[in-house]
Image (cartoon, rainbow, N blue to C red; front, side, top):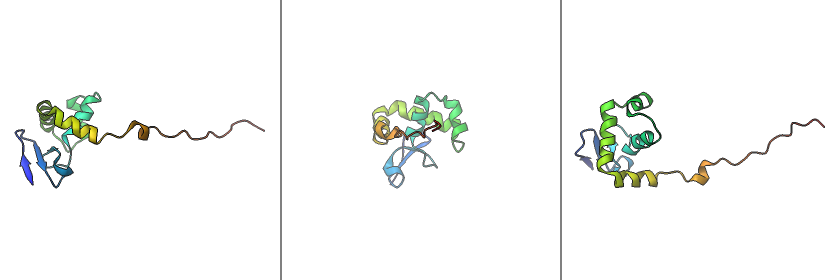
Length: 99
């Protein structure tokens, strides 16, 4: 099912990411834009990293987030990689000493 939101460039489609809000015409979720922004990427720089998006789409995604923070934060948390999976196990070092 396709649902246009009150934001021009944001839609929900149950066949794409189970209905999570995405940028129209893409599979890019609003949460991806929000996470980049939270990591300190300026909105103006996001289209350079995601060239299939326009600056208007990026700002519209952030506007959607402003209006739906609880919803988007829930998607972010649901898709978060647990910290214990982010830490790589230490590899044994080869001895560099001469015997």
